[in-house]
Length: 381
Image (cartoon, rainbow, N blue to C red; front, side, top):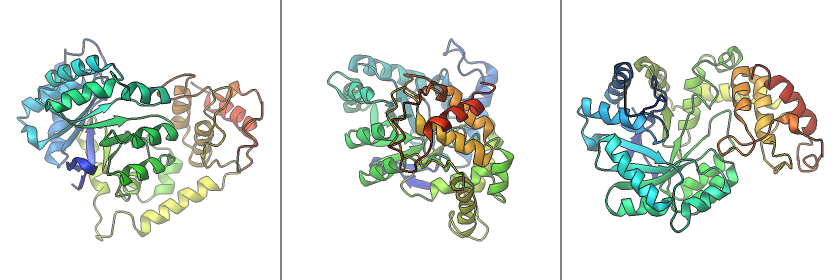
């Protein structure tokens, strides 16, 4: 296992983190009741990853049974508190509610303190204000921090780059949890800014949101050959030393093997070397050779119809270049107007007002592409 210092926290975390939102029946209320089947699954997975050197567990109040599960499993495994780093999250609440929820979380996890407490989902501009204002979420966390109940403070985000940058620039946080993968690189500026401020960087959902890599398309597998797409993506991410850890939301112990393979190289060359660069070149050529390739610069935003133009065209590009139909359709179907998590109307709402045309440096026919993307990606929604 490799370890990296998580920014200014001075915590040394394994480069893989055990995520906690995918256990059997994990979303079925009541959350405090955990079946033997669920408990065995979580026990087996947690025991296995700890044995292989993973020392960071990530959960959240909003992950159904997850906090209760880890509270029980860590006790069953007799894990010493100082041997595991625990990250959990609370939502955007007023300070009093936030403080109360922290106390509840400590009871769920059966611990005396939380290593890293994240504000869950700072996704839009109003979330920043709600989190940082007097009487807001951060105030409640700071109270708990002064009492030794919380060591470090972070935030997770599914927002657009400008929101992430603004939140980082507040300099109120020690860690940022964000999306960034080979197929989704527009948050690189946020990672670079976090690095300049010595923040920890935690990449969330690299295997699911990063392309459904546990079941990749045949085209993607072929382009990544001889590496598994998971191995390629892991090495791509870990080649950036500003990135400290990646979430692995595994549900069976053997699912860890492919991630451990990412760290093994018989020739002792760096994780990102000749082979990895060759594969990256193949992928880049396939993607950029598309007639309607979008660089996701986001200059087309805002759209008067609230369409997430760059995300829609990005998914359309992945659909065409790498035959990632399942991934593109799933992500596209998840977009909803005024949603805080995956924002945007679908492409069929385009009125051809043409406001975006003059903004696009590549001169793409955006109204046409939005309608074509909708025709293809809305199938089987």
